[in-house]
Length: 202
Image (tube, rainbow, N blue to C red; front, side, top):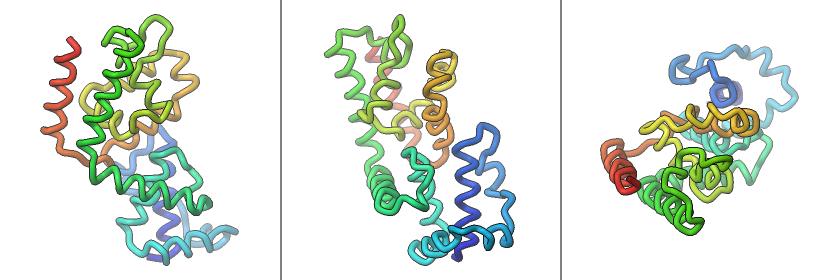
């Protein structure tokens, strides 16, 4: 691992998380970015330092993914914040099933306390945003949970049909879509949990 390689991973993942069209899984991380261009950057030493610190491909990919997932597009400059995001990402990976179940419970509690119909968890209720969107934006449920739900139920495209949501929160919803493939979980197990959750709502 050297600074140039870290730089290439950064470019590929930044493009993945900020562009509708680029998909790092389909493109296999192929991006424009020559060694000459890297050598001309004033901040190349940061990539070199990061490459020495992290040391291998898998971990540096996880470092960038964690930061883009949690909305930090300047991971290479962020220092402690970037390290904290990586630590949180790794922690959540270890307990993804529990987080998912807890977040579903938080959604139910929210609609019960606010005396809302259960349909408002994922759907617009008059002029109100869906509860799942509001709790995500308020950091009350995790982005990982919404990635899983979106894989199972495609809620993000539905939310983006709302012009206000599309105008204000498109970047946040793009992050949910782009994190698909990076959030690893037992698909069969969590599908059953989510199916049961939806059945209970009805």
